[in-house]
Length: 210
Length: 300
Image 1 (cartoon, chains in turn brown, green):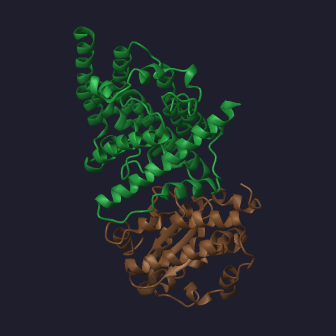
Image 2 (image 1 turned 180 degrees about the horizontal axis):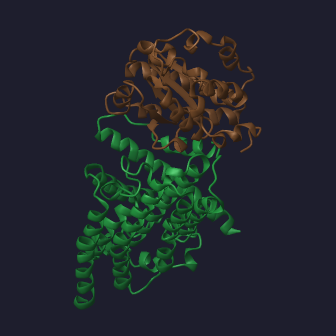
Image 3 (image 1 turned 60 degrees about the vertical axis):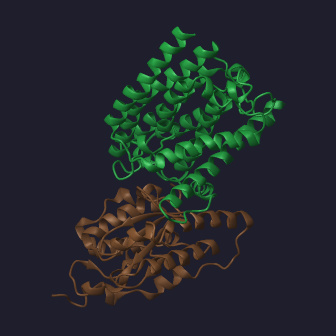
């Protein structure tokens, strides 16, 4: 039986999300624009197939919807990926693995979360071991709603993310760096003794030099 | 002074041709699969994006020096291959080198790979390297036998002399010694990492193979060297078999024709297993090579 105090959906911290989206409005220089354009045109995707959303990733990459025309390709390992796609509900056990994968990615990196399960728990809203709001544990750049979102919706989400990259808006990875303590506290609250070992995120405290 | 202009020109030529060829490769594959595919500059975008990413992981000094060894091997190889015939441009150091030196330099890539991946300790990477070295064992014997056939035919190891001996289409090695071309073509497909023999990076099996641990800038460097070295190998085959090229447009046309042949073959064949690939190399191209040696030595 769930209690309100156990369901983190009722404890969200709205200022934390708004702060992340309000970036400095300073324009990009010509070289930065060029780099942003390259980044926009080439997104390597690490598809973390947790729920039914993994089914929707296949048609996206294959002949019918062909995401490669936007420069979106599957990456084999977290090290080579730019975008982490969390496709569906996250059990707390899985959350640990997702965080580990995310922290292995090289910056700049972005997170896209698919489906209503990642936004509010979806049909698992009262489950005792499912994460309700992913942005409390990982900096989500783009939510794509639906249950499940069709590949068209996915492409629209990717294009919106590309627009954000091209405009040079601060990505979620900067938020994760700046508020690492907040994210880690949230992660520790659900993972408890299962928390990731310190050495996996120590370098975030080293002032961004690693 | 001449070198100062010539060497950047060679590196730039091989880089530009590299990303254009690979962009074409991706688009061509996409059209075969009835997709639109990415733009032809996609490989340039990917490569520059990786070069502008961060690189936070380290597995000790060898992990850093491995990619450097690979990329210096690629650049040196490119600089020892003459791009043009009867020209002072795009020659690099090719006057001071020969085919045997180029053969030596080809091995630097796998060596650097093995050193870097070995120090990373990633099991998928090590598996990829093992598969790569096994395949190397299979492909190098027929490849070198084919090159030896060409050297035997012209009785010289100088790429310049071999190019100069092929002045008209009738004198191309492709026409005068088709067996040598066949013997080299199959290992060449493998050394370009194209489909029937792409056991090293085999997607779905060993993830990215040797590159599994490289992300960010290291991967960008490795992509760069791969594109440059591929163009270097294509140009070498153009020099040896298609009579070289007197200007850049002929070079692009001939190298592209060769690349199209390889991509077309690789687009329709599924991947072989590692032991199947080695078996194949030691039977078909090697058998053909032995026939070629007999024909060249006794029938001349």
